[in-house]
Image (cartoon, rainbow, N blue to C red):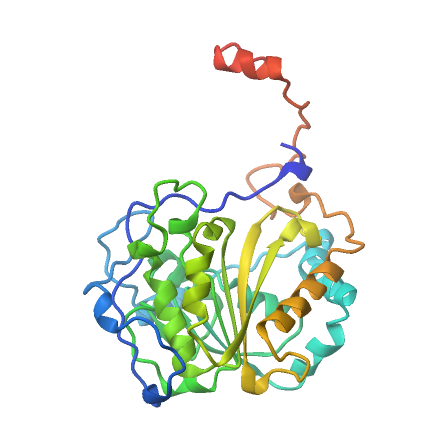
Length: 343
């Protein structure tokens, strides 16, 4: 496969549910701007799903931190191409959009951010790569392996092992933004028989929406795969129950704005009406602003760095550029079906 064809499938099929019950409590619940489902609609148990076992207990943050101290990660030095990719790609995109000056306004104070369904904390890493000082309020992660990664690399003030079953802490009520990549298994294009929002693995989405309404964070950004378009109407209906927000959707393929790989994703963006700029006075105006930024980001994209130049060095193997194969013809495909494929 050539570097121009590198892509990332939406998600792998999961036969187990990610998480379940919810009961979000905390100060000021009576003033929530959310008018959605009640807690009784959620089931009564939680499951920590990882690649080795579906019966494992929820991750223990203290134990994960102890393991991180006992077995620290050895930092890998990046070569010049890797450093330029990590630090330069995002800034180049912001320059094209004209947003670099606005983003720098966040550099004079620590921007309080909470993360749900945290995974590898891509959102936190992106903010840090842009030079934004982040006050990492909280993370939540039900996957035990991902929790170990978080313990090695981040220090959130609060950790929640289950986004659907937690009591929010006072720290969360001063969050400036909530970012979340809720589970994508129900929406993946590989799951043609999925029940979509009715699946157990979709429950974190409803819990996160309820959290947004309870905390009334100034900004929320939710991310998922393109396959969520199959139930986009239902997703929008749930988000629009957050009546104090302006809402917009941004569809991005990272490769179209200068990244190496193709990762088509949908981002659901909300801005609290009381803090929105004067020119953002409706959902349509927020959507127009988002579309304008994305159009500028796609202009004059530099050719991406070939992916094989970004691989970390392996002391036990020599990395070689991929062999460029000729494009398959219809004849090749017919031979392949007969078990007679040739190079």
